[in-house]
Amino acid sequence: FVVETCLGRKWSVSFAYIIGGFCLLALLKLEAGTTPYITCYFVGRAGIAYAFASIYVWFSELFPTETRQRFMALASLFGRCASMGSPWVAKVSDSGHFNLAMAIVAVPCVISGLIGLLFLPETRGKAMD
Image 1 (tube, rainbow, N blue to C red):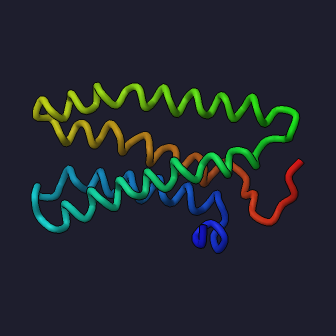
Image 2: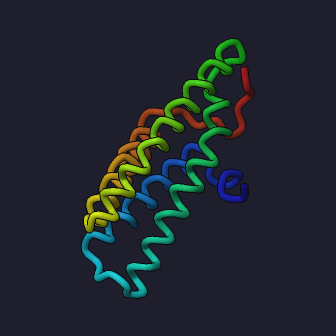
């Protein structure tokens, strides 16, 4: 809440996705089990969790009242569809390809963060329609 108040939702959600994605990508180069590896893993996962929780507030402010409910349902649908893929990502990780699993999670996060940062409007301090 404090970060969103100071930076706004666009910046906080976008940077959370970008930082989370880059931390998980850093795992590809770090030695497993070391302190930097564990730190990057937990910072990456926390960033993605923060962005996922905060994006619903921001997303609801992006659309006018007449269409907000439809777009919120669509956002929830896409979020849940992506969550349905997590067992397959876990299976990839369990088969000995942990780096591939982290790349599957990290790359869309970085891309989403950049798209949000470059193309979506800031809603902080603006009246909702």
